[in-house]
Length: 266
Image (cartoon, one colour):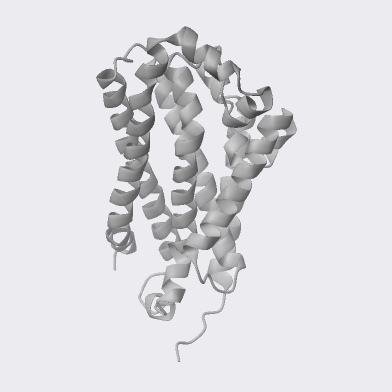
């Protein structure tokens, strides 16, 4: 029984759907970039009318906004919101979908250990996220040339999108942990939206008050996008935060999964 392949087949449609969502969001934002770049003086004057707190909350950095990567870092936060929901959905449903379908006991009667089942599901989820971000990255490269913004560092773009993937994996780890802590996940979508938007609200608050401590409380703040653009590298703190969240999330979830009792199907 190949659990990994089975999981990939089950998530195939959602992978296609989320890839299309991210590509559509990328297209929507990239399509309006030429309008801002065409008349920088007017656009800048218009954006400067926004209160500083509003610009901070929206992630508007006027010093870099009119460059492709600067504009991309602005749109990044909103596209990442969708990516985080995808990661959270995958994590929440990774194990709980078997409970909802009442197939957990059937699956575990197969000659496959719980460890192999968990690892196979884990790698299937990571594969889906990797496919999604690969499609999205290719689309952004195409859009950048289509809308006349091809002059940028490809390395920096890849670093930004790899950071995107790492944040998705963080939410996947949070999702699978939540699914193991709850006795039953009644609605994957409602829990995903609630958790992701709560972390996003914390991120917005951190941007408004400009307190670096908020970096430790939400995956949306793990990476300083402008520092990635300027330095072409990640900060060590960012990687440590990702490693802690992913490590704790997956390890604790695994321990709970292999030691839990399975309720018999009536």
